[in-house]
Amino acid sequence: MSLRTLLIAGLATSASAAKLLVGGYGPTSATIADGYIDTLDYTNGVLKKTAENTEAGAQPAWIDLGLKGKALVVDESWGTPESSSLHTFALNADGSVQHTAVASIPRGGPVSTQLYNGGKNLAIAHYGGHGLTTFSNVNGAFTLLQNIGYENRTTGPKPQQKDGSHVHHSVLDPTGQYVIFPDLGLDVTHVFCIDSATGKLVEHAELQAPTGYGPRHAAFWKSGSKTYLFVIHELVSKVISYEVTYVRSGGLTFKKIDEQSTYGPNADPAITQYGAAAEIAVSPDNKFLVASNRNVTLAQVPNVDPANSTQIDSNSIATFKPSSNGKLAWVQLAPSGGLFPRHFELNKDGSQIAVANQNSGNVRIYKRDVKSGKIGAQAAAIAVPGSPNNVRWL
Image (tube, rainbow, N blue to C red; front, side, top):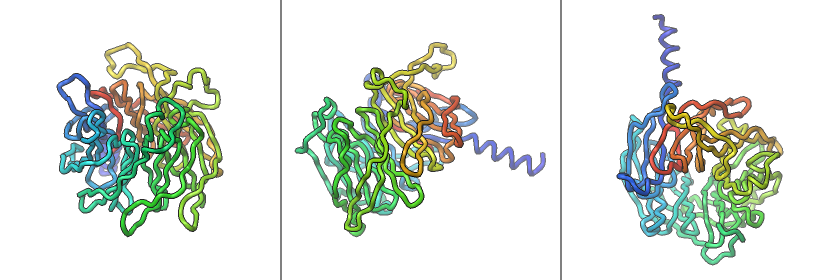
């Protein structure tokens, strides 16, 4: 075999192999009482579990790979919010994780983390804890800096909002100067400026959502010299795009540009009113916006087990193409591969998307056309225990 042939064969092998981490809530009645962080090997169209760790608590809700060689995981701890915790894992060469540290969190229901200030600080959004916390990070040791609550604020009108603030996501802006927090319960997105000297967050004017919309997650997008913010709203399954202006005296202002249903321009409100939009992300090439829909079944897909011919219900993944003025053009509604796709992630070049279908106990990988933005045929699938809610490409 020639050297050229060997090189091509080597490239083909490396291109078809990858590893993923999937986190989930543990089964309510199983030998695995706690939640889990599983390592998946993805080689030649086959997904296989190669390792499992159950040291991240009962309800691991988020995996953060922002620190080199580490995975940060928060335990949501529904039943015992006083046990909410931040876990640090070392990433081994084979993709498995090794528990190295745990830090207690003084506020319950953590669901999202965001490293900021060059990795020296960490912000945590607390859905069940009605607020947010910040930490200093010194060589992987996390110490509490701030504990900010919104217990006495007026909530939105819907049942999902009545019990208070539900801060659901923490997002760093493109300049690295701000962290924002969509709050489903209060119909606002909290805006904070970073004090780089202390690592603390300084609050500025909020972004007000329409009443009853329930902002859940958000993603910034750069187009030339302009910055836009896309906010996905769980309670109405809509994305709103805003043009962002940086105020010289501090803070951000937002101009609404567009509002679109995550079910497309021909969505039937009689059906989609039951939707619960979840994740939102910009594609790696910065050309598309991808979002997930839960709770509304519009299609069926093959069973994860190829020996089982029974099809299963599937929720959906929406794709938009943002224009330079912030308007969103509809591209596609594709199956997610199961129910309640709480989280998804595109691989590095955007050619594949991994989806964690929480209520179907599976992870699916679909092929994706990077030019059109459309999601295509299934590439691989695997059943996982409990309720998978987070999936990351390593």
